[in-house]
Image (cartoon, rainbow, N blue to C red; front, side, top):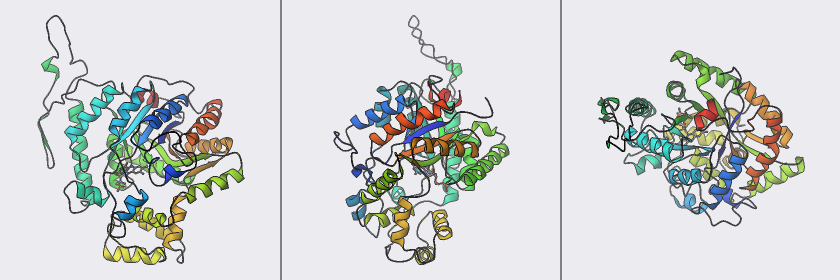
Length: 442
Ligand SMILES: Cc1cc2nc3c(=O)[nH]c(=O)nc-3n(C[C@H](O)[C@H](O)[C@H](O)COP(=O)(O)O)c2cc1C
């Protein structure tokens, strides 16, 4: 494996049907709204034509309560509806040959046996093209769907996630790669000496095993993690191959890569085995005029009362009635005093980056157009990607969502940005391998 790799690209299509994105002029044209897989098939084919590594579906299985009720959430479509992404991944894999898929499963509410079995099965159905985003869930209404009063404590969630990973690793190893026999003559299916019970007994799980799935094309489906806390980075370093990372400037990316390197070395892993995919969005335009027009169209798609509803949901302010005219600083002081909301990291970031007089409404609008965007001409976007990629250590790549409509916004990236990256030798012209891991690490 060389020191510097080529850029890898995942397209985030989780929210194209919600959070007002479906209203962007030209989006979903010719397709009935979510539920019909046609648009997803078209996107999958476009991404494969662009030699993308994969498509990503985030997942949070709760309906946010905002300002004391679910009404705004449902009426404005804030992270709602959210279907389980796994059936769509299976369907999209049938219309593609090479494109990979990252789908999300919670280590807080699922069971590791179910998760390992589902992912190994999906690895078969996609012919080795699946990775999963293993998350430590933070949103209170998701907790309430799984029988908890509210989100369990951060430390508890990471302890469970750590044992969850330990169990999955044992399960994936419980069937040796050459265990299957499938001998038509004798009727012998597998060699029992190569299939092992795991007999795991821990604090959170008791699992006999083995995994009742034949070894899948990737052996262990790839894993992505996105926790940004110290515990999240440690777990990523131990078990993941990819990390969704945040960083709006090259300095922040370089600092994050350094933290990840140190975490990998601390657990005895080569940092080259764990690569960041920088989260952000893209919008390819012809000039500054089109960039401004697209920004206007993007912000206009949100109904008037939506921005602070989004903000309340991002901050996880379960039941707290937010005054859009109040200042960010006063609101956060009150939120902390009341002890609501699990995402204090976001709150601290907001305090650091806002002037004292900024209102919630202004901040919410600002967040909808945050600094992680790659907006510009194809050449400008390619330049920024190149610099961001090297700042992040020259490995990994990007996990980008389209900001303008779908599928046209994605198609424009594929037709205009990808050829520039290819000419610069920064991006593949053909898929390297058969499985997602071979393409990402081959
Ligand atoms: C780019 C990105 C994507 C994420 N996707 C999801 C998701 O789909 N579902 C979810 O519950 N959490 C998601 N998260 C949250 C993290 O995976 C993580 O588990 C959470 O932030 C708690 O960990 P932390 O306290 O270590 O940050 C995402 C985070 C990032 C940065």
